[in-house]
Image (cartoon, rainbow, N blue to C red):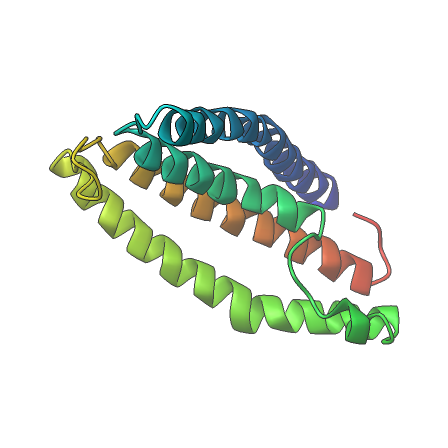
Length: 172
């Protein structure tokens, strides 16, 4: 694959991750409003909603899963910066690449594979939540979780390629 094509693919993946993360971040406003509404009804009027719990965990899960690729793109995931910042740049790049190969890719592969199985089963039976008596359909949430893992894997490949090029002394 030519460097120009590789650059275009990586940039496209990164734009998709950024766009998805920014769009999904607006769901936080809806989540705050929804939880606030339920808290006011629950404590001010003693009239809790039956749907709030289901909506809040599905919104929060959607935000987390679909924004994870964007967070990886901006290098915002948890890391030991206190230690790694003392290392030379080349050593940090080597360690990042090693951890991608040893930890990130196998873990995301396993999570994605399991998620696909659960999603296929959930969609085939039109799975509903057993958490509340509202019994909301949960299969769309399963699709979102799988899409989040897929986006994270693709962004991981783009980040890996970008770091590999940096290690070789080339800008992608």
